[in-house]
Length: 83
Image (cartoon, rainbow, N blue to C red; front, side, top):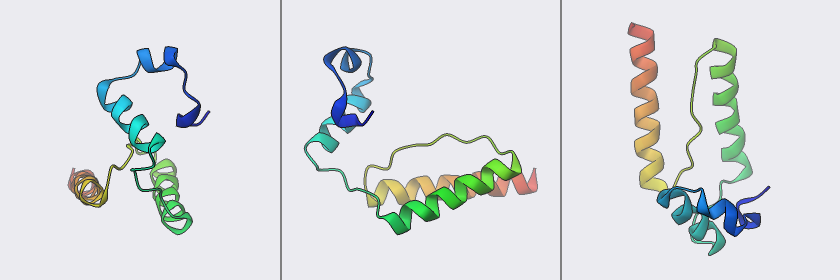
């Protein structure tokens, strides 16, 4: 199911941030990931999976948000390495 296919019942169970994201996507205000960028993202997921690292997929709301999330991920990977 895509976010554009959500029903009113689904919306009742969403957080305010989830509703905001849904509205942004519906209004096409949110940037879509390019196929090249998606492949890079999935390679990282595959590496985490192979290493047995638990992770949470988080939607990116824009360039600044992505930069912050990447920095958090790098900081946490460094913590795991230095454990």
